[in-house]
Image 1: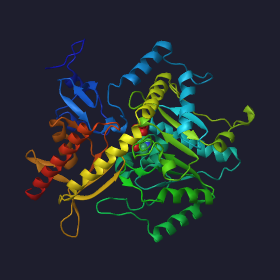
Image 2: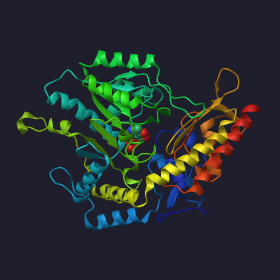
Image 3: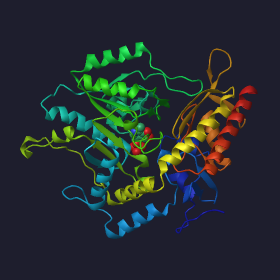
Image 4: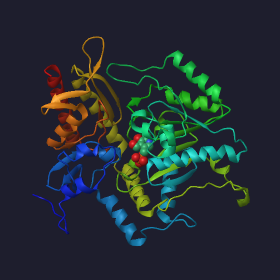
Length: 462
Ligand SMILES: Cc1ncc(COP(=O)(O)O)c(C=O)c1O
């Protein structure tokens, strides 16, 4: 069945002709069997030809309840009927006010909320807040940011500067304000078991803090785990150690919970679970469960109060977007957060997390799996040849009569099996909608494990 919309547009053809997709080599895209999604139904996406795909990557890690949750849809519909938009420049609006109160109850120790529309913007806000905080306090020397290698904080200029992933951002380097990056500790993996920060590493980190303390305004890091720049689940105690060093050397701590907050790692708010209270924290993605673009930067009163003064002293914060605190986004987030409580989502996430951990043991036996990391509803399965002493990365597979990248192969084969996944390089990232039911989750894992078996076969008979 070819899906033509009301003006008779062939969606697949039009997509190929007109739409430029993110992080995509469009030359490849034009040759592929592209899919255009027209509908959502529970945890499934339905394309213009009526095919159903289990949303195995939670629509870029933001989907919580699936695609047709009536409580959230009704909240947005009610809101659009009352007030579709009113600016936060010079006026308040009801959903933005109510959501701020709700967020501050959850994100304990934070006192104020600044809204934006996406995670990258939330990071820009945090960086600008930190820089101006010191300036407002009369210290103009503190201008440098420190961040971690392999961090990813989004695609805007400030976010790329602190989350500089060379493979992604090399062409934009001339426009970046490069920050000081320090090495990330070895990731915590469950298979093989690895968790620990060496004494050597702790000493090196402390030396960096000490060297930069007079000029560094803030340390920026993802909270709990790095994901997009290469999955790295932090060793126990690492984030707490950073928080302590920030205090000791008078450096602000900015935590990025855009991808890891609201349950992804098994905790509602990751910084509380890690015992590391930040000065500024960013949320996005799961905040609205995928029903509207919205992000938020929360800060402590000490930050906020440094911006209070006589207007002519010019200490107020200069940031805002047309859609800052958009009523529809805020109403979606309110309904979403209410559902977390009503459905006891955290308990479901933790049960599914145990299920995931047990099943991950199944694929560990495979000779093409080098390591497995897991926390909450995030798992990273590293495709590597683990035979012999040296691990040889599996860059390309000889399939379809040619050499193709393994993650391209996995995505295409999963789509054929009715599952949408999106890997990161040679890492298979398992990051389902947070409220996924056991049957769909089991199916997602079955397909991924079957495909790992195929990679294994191709690898042994190239
Ligand atoms: C940790 C982290 N921070 C920030 C962002 C940027 O969020 P957005 O894509 O909404 O701009 C992402 C996106 O993946 C992320 O993973």
